[in-house]
Amino acid sequence: MDIKTVRLDAGTSWFEEYEQGALHHTLVLVSYGKCVYWIEGEKVLLEKGDLLFIPHHKAYYGKCIPTVTHEKYVVCFQSSAALLLPLVNNPYYCKWKTGKYELLLQRFRVLQEEWSERLAFCESMCGALTQEILTHLNREVEEGRPSALKEKHTSLMKGYIQNHYREKVTKEELGEVIGKSPNYAASVFSEVTGQTIGSYVHAMRVKTAVYLLSHSQRTVGDISDYLGYCDPSYFHRVFKRETGKSPAQYMKDRDIPVH
Picture 1 (cartoon, rainbow, N blue to C red):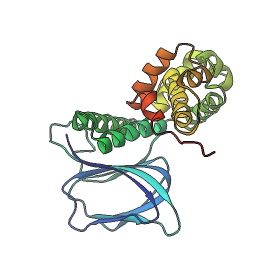
Picture 2 (picture 1 turned 90 degrees about the vertical axis):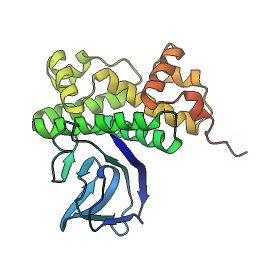
Picture 3 (picture 1 turned 90 degrees about the horizontal axis):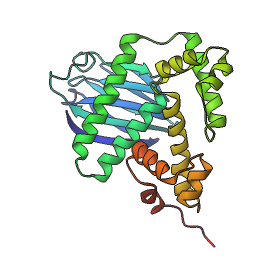
């Protein structure tokens, strides 16, 4: 896989057009607001949580909606026919509301950071991350959407985790939340989100850690303890795995208080 560019679009002034179609595939995830594409004359409205795949040689243009701000991640890439993913070898575009939003957003964020900072072997890392995202998209499309009941149960479990992520969250607790067995809770959560309960909790903790490292004066040890990690070295490993950076790298760019 040959990554051509990775970017983060934000604001109200974005516009792009490929009258003859691009030589690359385009993969988009909207993380805030709304924007619109016209793909071979067909209007495609995107909002938070929507994935869009546009195959190469497909004529399109896209723009912001007047007065509506938005944020989206965009990856442009070329691939060989050896990439055995149906969507990539399909001549039609695909719009999909992903159930794995938190997981894929984290992948896009790491992808964009890798590309913008030009880290060592970033081309290989970005290619691997893009292929992972495409694989999740292909699986979701092929398997179809989970039932409304499963999505409701998962929403309830997510709500519980958001209020208790600094504590130990178990499948037994989530089973009680939805009135089902612990194994059912764990299975449905993984099916809908693409993450285990544990990995989802870690992701929420790391998201909070990134904010505190950038916008507070707390130490790494204090943040680790606040988020429920008794062992700071374990927090370091989880943080590096989720973000690709160490906590210290985020602290270098933290806000300096004005006295």
